Length: 298
Image (cartoon, rainbow, N blue to C red; front, side, top):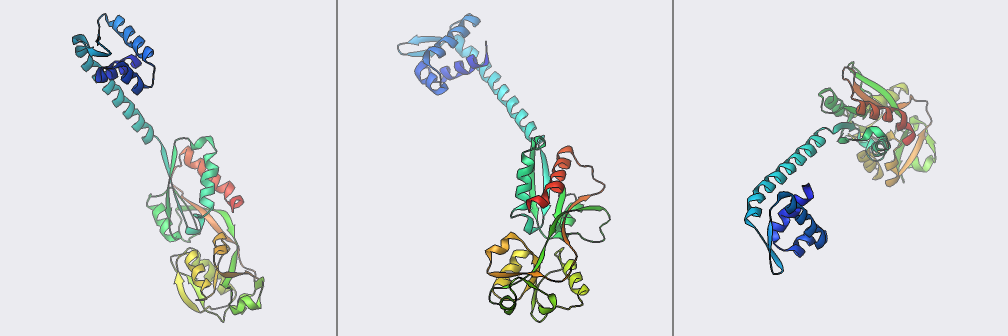
């Protein structure tokens, strides 16, 4: 007696018609007839009696059917339990990242990691936001790692630089600076124009503040925004100029990009993890991918 014979018996008892049962089981009628015959031989009783072109389940077949139903139902329950346990055994890596990393960098990191053996039974959850928000999520244990700006006075967080970003001056295409300068500009030449500036929620804000302090310049602020695409959009309508990372999304906007002539410190994006949290092998493997491949992806 095998499992297929029990499935075949149950289906034939429902249809009481060999051709219909065989078709629904995707087997030939002779194969079904043979399986039922072998089952009857093993049990030593007839399970079906022929009535013309159809068959009728016998009394012995009716007695046997509840046990087959119970057995098949029990096996199906077991299969579902194992599948559920398999799903529960999958590790979920929770990644947080600033908005500019979502367009290209994070998807490429996931793709790179998916090629490694360690990605088996791993799923991902994603959170986007400003650096301050993401680090709060990290400290609360809601995410496993964050790709963000460096934030000072966070002694419990390990920051590893993974991407160096170039900062540029961005203006509208018809802005006076765009007409005067084709490729690069000194920041002193920009100070006469209002700036669209990163808000205090942005991890880039302290860095740009420091750039202006080093140059002994005080920009006029037209407005504050949290993220880069909003900044680019406002620049494109000439609401102001901006200092921001040279991100690929700038190519979608009607803006002019100028390299900064001044010597300014390098701007890095960091991988942030909690110092006191032990990483699983899968998470450590993904962390290594972020560390070693992020700069090459950009």
